[in-house]
Each structure stands twice: as structure tokens, then as C-alpha cells.
Image (cartoon, rainbow, N blue to C red; front, side, top):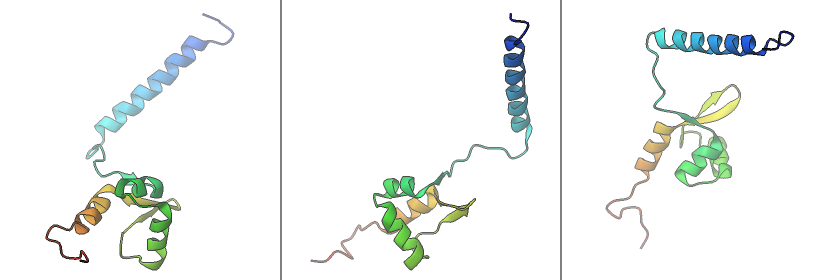
Length: 99
């Protein structure tokens, strides 16, 4: 152990703080893993197979087509919203298909 830099003590202190934070998070009431994540426009576009440019166009010209959230100045889409959008676009009986 180097007495000048005291590296093992610092490493121990950092680990102790991480353990303390994890214990605090576990004791919070209602804490659960988020099962409905937020996607940025690139991830959302990849998820529903359209481009970021199309998402941007929809946000400005058709704001009701695909709801989004502004989080800290950035655009985010909920996975459940994207799933609902895909479900609404599903064609099962041939209606909406031009012949």
C-alpha cells in the first residue's frame, strides 16, 4: 500500500458509496425497473422502421400522429406508444390496401 497516494482506501471509499446508494434505492417505496423505456428519435425510428427525418416531419406537421415527450430539451418516444402505433397500422382484412 502506497502511503502517499492511499489508493486502496480511496477505492474502498468509492465502493462503499456505491453500496450505500444501492441500498437507498432499494429501500425507496414504489421503486421498480422501468418496463416502458423512452427512445430517442434514432432508436424510435429504428424500432418502427422509419427515418428520423420522417419522425421530425410528423412532429411538426402532424403532432397528433405519434405522441412524444420533451425531456430536458430532447425528444423521447415511449415504447408503449410506438407499439400502439404499430398495432394501429396493422392491416389484417385487406382494408386500406389499394388494388
